[in-house]
Amino acid sequence: MKWPHYGEAMSDGIVTLASARAAVTVDLAAGGRLASLTVDGDELLYTGEAGTGLMGWGCYPMAPFAGRVRNGMLGFGGLTHQLRLNMPPHSIHGTVFDQRWERESKNRFCCDLGPEWPWEGYAAQTVDIDEEGLRLCLELHTAGSPFPGSIGWHPWFRTQLRTGERLRLDASVGRQLLRDDTGMPTGQWVEPTSRPWDDCFTDVAWPIALDWAGRQTLHIDSSCEFAVIYDEEPQAWCVEPQSAPPDAVNSSADVVTLESPLIATTTWRW
Image (cartoon, rainbow, N blue to C red; front, side):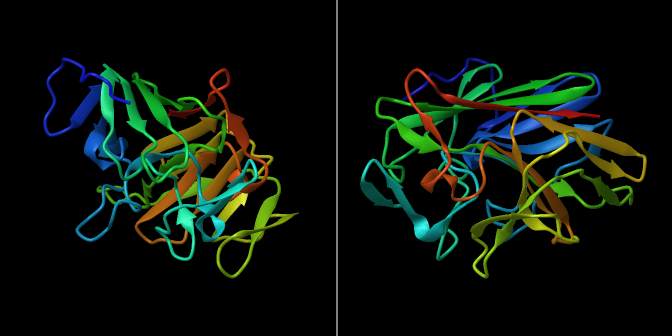
């Protein structure tokens, strides 16, 4: 699928949308991710450094699956498909976070699911920003045949502002999905363990609050039922709204049809 470029000028696939207080930069060449989010001049996202790789910075949309797929094996409709193993021995974070996106309109961006996905389709993201917050809407569409899908976002928030304030996270979550020694879900839901986490949760009481010592506060809300929280890295933590748990495309994921695309939203208020 191809979309015409929107007529507004941009530099090397970089699109900036702004309000009086905030600005967000979308990098089309780097998976359509939010490469920067500044509020009152403070950068809230980890913007990476040399050698970080595309998985470790900004905020990128995950589609047509969010999180890991065990051994990259996807079974659906009586057939088994091998996905790329981009985190061996598993597949992770979908097919569009490292592909180039196209600008369909002023604030809507699209990307083919690509040859690594067994079915034709596309992802679309709409980005809205105003003085009080940011709203992202992610869509997953098929071009014909139904397929299992899950979607979500993978933001990396700075653990320390450039002015020195350190990040605190306040999340009210219910059950936690146990992982095995390869990081894959066992299917067992338990009471949350103590932090740090690299885990999927349900019964999430949105919003989840991020606070940089009172200088900046971000409240993350979402239509998603699940959240993956990752706070094991010194430079950045992740709060990832997801429509389904990891590996759900092999069990409990939504089925995307022409009549029923998969749509999710997340809103960040400051």
